Image 1 (tube, rainbow, N blue to C red):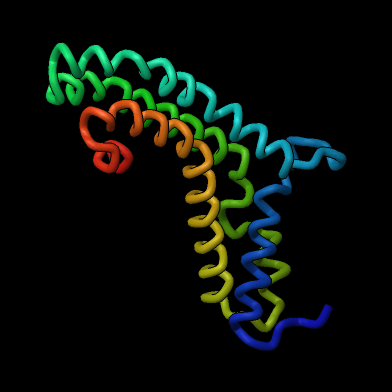
Image 2: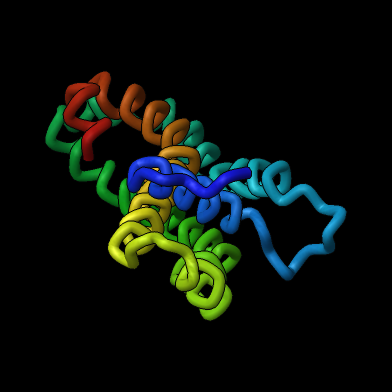
Length: 165
């Protein structure tokens, strides 16, 4: 494969390289497909928040009748805090697994430093890859519970307001 000649092509190639490095982990053997394991890990990490969101389905119907929208909003704070806590723990676990790929390490510096690619391009590609990793994992861990919780509580307080919260 020939070396990219334009900065956008080099940037794209570096983003692909850094993305594959997230799935290259020394904790597992060489025969383990970490991409497939990553999907199962995200599914396992989203399970507690999905169960919590499903658990409160019936709770807010009776609260809305008894306490009104203000009571529902006051009681939803606890579940929101738990969902945020689950998301933080899940992202922490995923960050620990991907820790080696978060920064430009010695191997990257030795290999990429000899190429005719500006360091600004390398660091920009690493930054874009980190942001993409964060967005994808955050959405994957939180999307189901956010929708279920927003539809449950939002029926009484406004779905869009709860989905954003």
